Length: 458
Image (cartoon, rainbow, N blue to C red; front, top):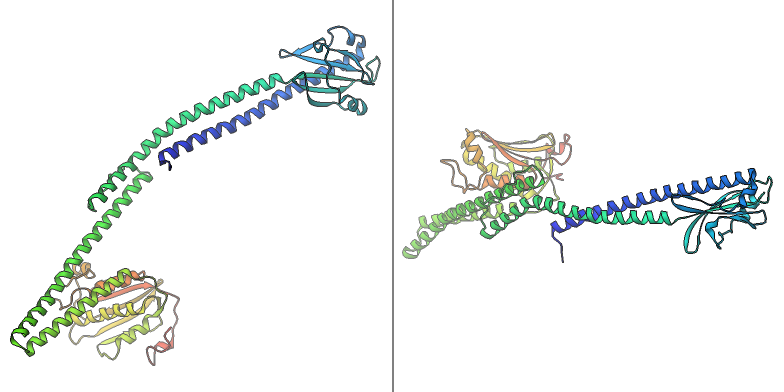
């Protein structure tokens, strides 16, 4: 079973709170235990020092009943005084018939160094402090004193602290669950509205609909804006596709209708040179239109390319022997691209210049580079496009008023080819330019100035 985002966030918040409280409880527990044990050790050491002073100043009082009995914090301390042979000389009345563990006494008497130890007596935990006595006078001279205190109070304090930490963790987890649930529900409410809006768009298939605005400046608000921009782009793409299909159908209908009419005429009246010429013209127009549509489709769906293309050599090859076409390509210009597609785009620009430029005017094909861009330009001596016409020049099936007989796909193919190569196509007056990312730095290359234009091609 997969948990919802809301449940995962709530569980994560609760787990984080529990872990934080647990770590805090462990830290506090260690600190409190250290403080309590340190306090007990100081009390044991101070009491042992008092017994040592008593053994020097008044050794007879060590054996007096109750002289060694004392308590700290309500807990009775247990004391035993032993001579240098480890025999008990005096002890607290609270011990009754029990004796304190004396396994450290021999070491303490031997080396004169006090020691702490943890042990048990009658099932109770003890903290022992064994210290040497001065070798001055009296029966305890050179012996040792054992002072012991129970650790039950420390354990009880730590148990209460652990219980408080556990209860605090549970309460904090419950509060975290409630608070995080409220906050997550409030935070996810815009996402739920976005999800409902997206489901409605999916149900209706209407990309003109928009998702509800989040009215926030956080990630959810930016997501809503991004999705709405995406829907707007999809809507524009769908409109473009509809217009493209409608324009393609319209453009195809004309030559197909003419073909059918001419075929019907030939069927009724037999061969006629004029009808055959019209038939051939309509078939050529239909073939050109289909070729352009296929080329445009390939540009929209073509993949990556690895070929290195020399635009200067390509321009010289396309110029050919046409006296109207002048090629200006003084330096090698290299790009990474599809050579056939770039050749088709350049051919479209040259054909466009032939169609709309003066009949005997010059057509200039210029290749250059700068700022990391390679530029391929075609310029004719005509009046060129106005700013309004230039804004529509690369649209599919667009033709200027009084234009040629083409279907209006040539410049659209140029634009698609440029964009597929990571560049752009632009027009200024009668100059059409393709800008592409340059492949390398350039230098003068005599290979482009003479000989076969295809020779030496990379």
